[in-house]
Structures are given as C-alpha cells and as structure tokens.
Image (cartoon, rainbow, N blue to C red):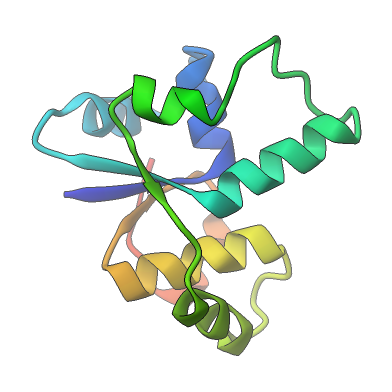
Length: 125
C-alpha cells in the first residue's frame, strides 16, 4: 500500500503522539508499505511554524522524511492543475493538494479529516 501522510499525521508520527490512529500507526510501520510526505505538507508546517501557530520543538521536518524512510512527494504541474479543478467541498489549499496528489498517484491518505471522503479518496485512520 502507498500512503500519503496529512500534516497532522506526519507531525503526530514524529512526536509519537497517541492521537495518531492505531490502524494508521500499524500501516506506517509496515515495511511492505511506502509512506510519502508531500512538499505541500512541509510547506504548510513551515508556514504555521513561521506564524507561531506551531512549535516544532526543534524538529527538522525535511530531514525527518528520509530519517523515517519515507519518500518525498514533489508537487507537479499536473498536481496543481488537478487541485485547482477539484470541487469546493473543502477550502484548505494544502488538503486540496494532498487530495489531488492522492487521486493522480493512487495513494491512500492517512488523515482523520473527514472532508477527504467527499472526494472519494481512500483514507486510513
């Protein structure tokens, strides 16, 4: 299975936070699964940290991708066009990008955000 981590899932994984769902945690640790972190996720986290809305406690969220044997998922022009074309069930631009990436790349999103289901993107929590 190929998993795409939403921002909260990635941060909770890094912090070993118990809010990360048990099924999600099992799937992330399963060595047969590929876990991806979008550039959009890093962008969202960096913006929130710069605005003082998020304390990363010194974590380097970029280097943690490789340190956790995850794969970085860049944003392509096709992803951007698909995100712009999505119906407006959800207004968060970062989540819209993840949804578009999941659709194009055939990924399952690790998220507790129920708004993803309006786009018929498979999720796991």
